[in-house]
Image (cartoon, rainbow, N blue to C red; front, side, top):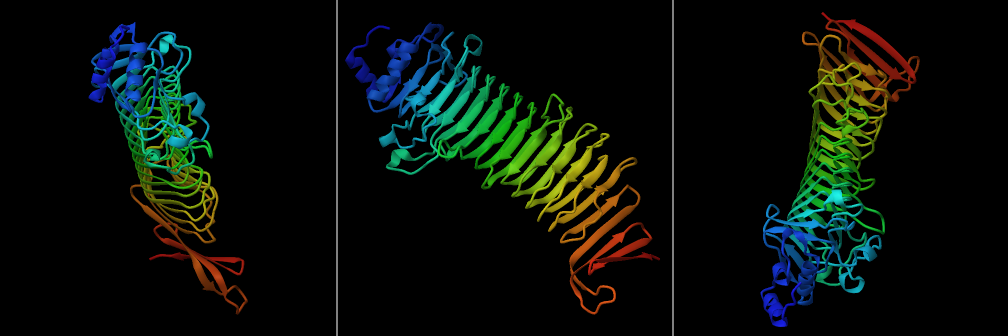
Length: 492
């Protein structure tokens, strides 16, 4: 690289923009521009920070170290590319002291040396996977950074890895955590596409992740190590070899989409606390038709406005699997476009599940079930199921539940299987039709005051069941003092 006069360097920095071309970068897709680019970065850093500008071109480089308050800026992700040199076997972009900081729970800029205020905008970062044996494409440990209009492709390992501490606090304004990612596209990573482990309070405006060999997006926290809590506008993750979107910490999200991934499309597994998401859409997942993965898995702590998922041509395990407590959903729409053998909505048994309104249809394969529940506790579900081999299946009575189950069955389809003993603290309503006759069954199970046989002492917790078994028969069961009595009435 030709030597630059001090005056030329100072003149360039005076405008707060440093051009890599002024430091000898060529950008022809052949020349190794590492030294020139790093010199421009170091010069901007020495001047107190600034923008390192890349013109249109393809810049071949080995690993570049990005310090605080330096932003790499191209002419747009379709015009400027930085490509990892063959055999580098490392990250392409890595923040200063990344190896020393990762996993350390360090947070403060002044006392712990955590990078801040850096950025990458308007570039494509090419990890050149075919000519590497190791390395993520981007390695970040830091906070309050910016990434905008960035394409990350062909990483050998993770496409975009970002981490910062689990702890928080501020010694001065530099310790504000809120990094911002918007217009990030990650494609063909050899491991996960986007892996978020901090900084907490990161804002992801929009991110699109496709065809990763691991999970598309992973958002993670580990106590006293790192914290990935963040706010999300839109994430669309598709065609990945693992899960589309996996969240193991608290987030507030607007829209999450998981499409045609090999495993689940969208997974919330927060463990404790409650995440929120306005819209979840997942479809065509478990694309190998293993029958092992649902489109959506809700493992704990999620409040969702709308969940819309459907199976297109693949035999997944089904639509939604709810495996733990504190799940509240406003509206669910689950649809299979094939004769599906799985379950539309499934829970083996949880507490505090609330579903305001669910519509399930199309699980009409030999073992298909619209809604399948185990022993639930304090759960409220209102649903309408149609065109499923079995509309509803409830294997155990549970307690404290409110069910409003309605449905339409066709010839050869079963309306309900499972327990018929809903005595306890449950309130259950069924209303089914086969297209010509509607059968209603309603359990009115309040704390009725009833007198047991041969007793003058009332049972304060008596129960009554009214069951319309046909168009002309009403069966009434009364339970009090441990005794069940029933009577059938013929209706005129």
